[in-house]
Image (cartoon, rainbow, N blue to C red; front, side, top):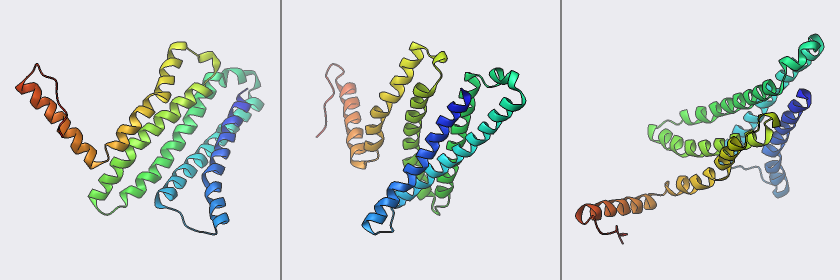
Length: 207
């Protein structure tokens, strides 16, 4: 039923909030430290803002659910069908993600130098894109109502979250390395030069 569907989503946000802050707090307590890395702090801020925003949105939706159940019981099945519930839950998660993202971007825009801002955006955006692709497609596969299931769509979405992120990760991490960029540039240049000078020969790998 809609009530328990939204309770499931609410439980996920609560679990996310706990997993965001408690492990680091326990680590600091056990090792008697009070430090956290810059990236760790940024990640905590992003995920905490994300889960808290999602929780507020879901609580608002649950209020609407109870309002319809009490005030319009005869229309409950129509107003809160499986498709409407899925759309509202997706909207709650998407709104929370955008809200959390505004805080990551706000921190980057405070960097005084343009070069520093460009470096931060070029580093963060590819990672965020891959993580978003993985999370959204996974949620779609496992949380969508059975009535909307389609073998072809399920196959495409499964490929998106199981194949695409692992393929993109090495590219994203490797292409940040200047030595790998230079080696790739030499390889491509060598292939083109060889193809122009002797089209019948295979391209070689420069030493």
